[in-house]
Length: 436
Ligand code: EPZ
Image (cartoon, rainbow, N blue to C red; front, side, top):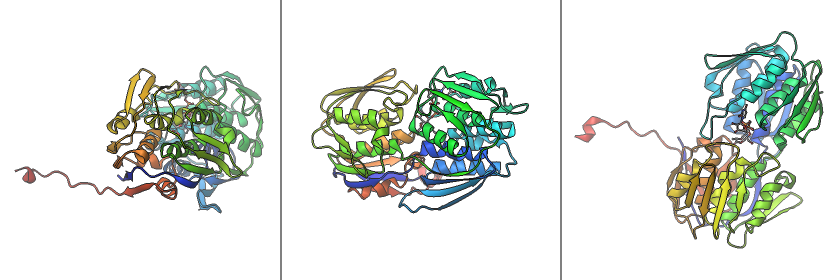
């Protein structure tokens, strides 16, 4: 397993190209199952999760090809699901990437059957899929849970239905958007997720011929059609990657332009950076982040979009570890999204967690240490802390990072960070003779 070594203390200056959003590309890839035509995606970030989704679709029978993108980062991808011959999403793929469950709605809508492994929990929470399943049952799917799998089938087409999500769910909204696009009749989703990545999927489905109204609001109306066709679609820039690099620039007192970032998708995050004393404004090419003064303490509560995103919580916590004063963060989306706290504490951070809230008492500086990545966004918070820490930090288990950040070291070192990846050779197993 690789690790990343960072020597802190350098200001980040210059520009960083923001890649396409992982959390938009994944459902967009699943949408290829809805048509026998070819779906052409551009600005697809080249990440471990994207490869996992490609492998999952390929074992269903989707024909996938990657090609170099005209831009410096990302890939073009062509997906053709004309001949789907396997309707099972196996445990070994689903457990490595929960977003695999997004094939469920599309397989049911087009083929009337699907056998999808239950994703199981992950580091940040139990992450059930009950909302996905309840909604599909309302649309006429027969669902049975057995041997760790969702066994689903329909008699004829799915039926349009009124669906009131008792909780806002990005994945459930996306699964039902895809299912309803080919259902018979009208589906109305209430309390739907409004994230830019959900909108990206809806816009692409519209380009494929779906009839969708209310995109970006909490009430979405889908009138099912018989067939969908292919289209060309470019993945929306990643607002979470942009926010992550903004925090990296801010903690180093830097000045970085995030090329391709869309300020309209980052309003809640930009407000918090501004409250913390960081200058953040729109430019012709994206968003510029300048930190001249010491970071000020602030309070954050994570919320569904357009509120402050849970996917930025760990990164902002790292930044607030060196703020002037005490900050409070409350995590309302996931029940266990503070795995980064003990690791940040190893670097000298003063953080106390009570239930879903964390109090961060800002320190003058952090000190480099050996730390371990536990989940995708937690691993980025350790990178951010390390960039400002005194001395050397080594981050283990960086495979978490590779799931969601394209060529991270390259992007950061181009702005002056002292960061390198070290490939960890497996250590020789302990031998008893050595002990003697
Ligand atoms: C998506 O996960 C993102 N992943 C997550 O990003 C993100 O943190 C999350 O949305 C919230 O914004 C992708 O898009 C691939 P949810 P998802 O359904 O869809 C509960 C990252 O770092 N819930 O909106 O799984 C759930 O437990 C990842 O990129 C149910 O109770 O999230 C959670 O508490 C991490 N039942 C809340 O709803 C359900 O059926 C929000 O989950 C579904 C969800």
